[in-house]
Figure 1 (cartoon, helix red, strand yellow):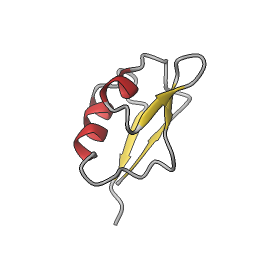
Figure 2 (cartoon, rainbow, N blue to C red):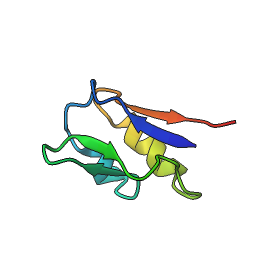
Figure 3 (tube, rainbow, N blue to C red):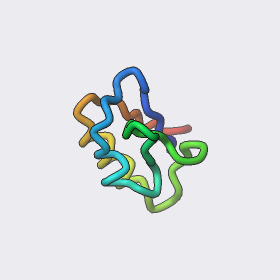
Length: 66
């Protein structure tokens, strides 16, 4: 599983890094950023989905890798 943020849709609400601080951070202006390479570690899939479902702009994509 991998996460990514569409920077064109992100409005900087910060819910992603509040709900999943192991996966997301904020830049200097408060916009969400993906930490590392976006690969979701085992045990963090729930947090990735929670952050995506709570993003008002639906800027977070959770990609299920084959």
